[in-house]
Image (cartoon, rainbow, N blue to C red; front, top):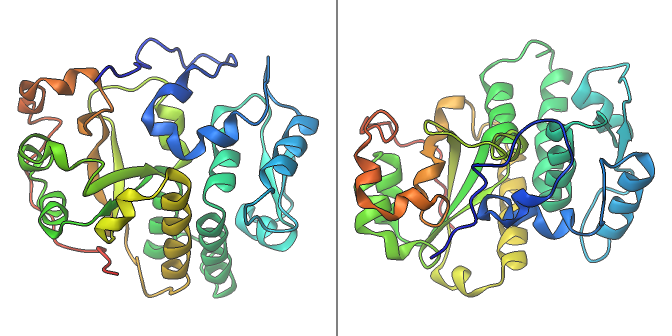
Amino acid sequence: MTLPSVQAVSKVNHWHTEYLAHPLYQPVSAFARLLSLPDWPGQPEYDSLLQQARSGSFLPDNLRFCCDLAAADYYEKHIGDTGEVPTRSRNWHDWFNALAWLAWPHSKAALNARHVRAIQRGEVQRGPRRDAATLLDECGIIVACANPALGQALDNMQWQQLFVDQRAAWGRQIAAYTLGHAIFEVGLQPHIGWCGKALLLEVDEAFFCWDETAQRQHLDTRLAALLADDNWLISPRQLWPLPLLGIPGWWPANENPAFYDNTDYFRPSRRAKSSSVTC
């Protein structure tokens, strides 16, 4: 496989779309391509993007990306009350947050609602539940898996088995889908040591016969339903570290099995089973 590399793409604050060739961005690529933009989007472009994205997709009726809005209330509460997402101009982090809302609307709404419920309970200062929701929102990678042994290998951080011995299973029995908008931002200039926070969702093998849109919409609906239970995902430690450059097809150097010998990156530590979810 020839992987389009984003290693040379600078994170300097200039507009470009070269990053869309990388599989990290697959969940948001169709939405990012709805507009042909020669420069950073402004309010008219964000409004047009949202209007186009509404076709055939669930999005909150009052959702709007508001450029340079200074929310008078808590960020999450303002979104919950108004549907307005404060969006900084010429800012990669907020551009990718907008794309994440378009790609994962149920999950993003459920994450925001979880924060709002916590604030209403008096949890103004973030505790473990809000920290877990924030970590998933910023750095989350949904790992869909149809083979319990592969899920166990992820839980046990058995990278040799997961990425080398079972390499052919990727795309057939296991796959990664980026949710976290901070992950999209860091992906502009990836580096050894770069990890996401994995949330394992078990699926049927038939899942991997569906097209990307159907897969993403299934995971989005399912994750949102789980997030509605505030007794689920109660600690950041329930999200597992996932070395993103080890995912087959995500980094050219990992075609060589010796790439995984770097135990500073592919640490063999054992973590307790936590947030895996069965069908």
